[in-house]
Image 1 (cartoon, rainbow, N blue to C red):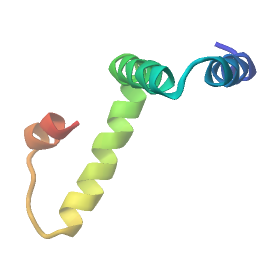
Image 2 (image 1 turned 120 degrees about the vertical axis):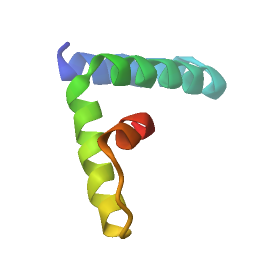
Image 3 (image 1 turned 180 degrees about the vertical axis):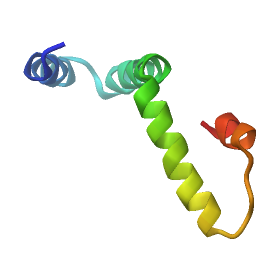
Image 4 (image 1 turned 30 degrees about the horizontal axis):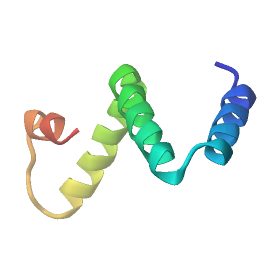
Length: 68
């Protein structure tokens, strides 16, 4: 989807809908985006590996996948 169109649509919705409804829409949209965007999940897993490895504990791939 065109980024400008998406931004304009979200901007319009936030002006028209009450704040509580905006949060509900945002929660649902972020959940769908997370579910269908494998690149985002892979990036999140990579970031978690860096953070968790820096804490001095060993985390298996399956444990990291459960966190993601």
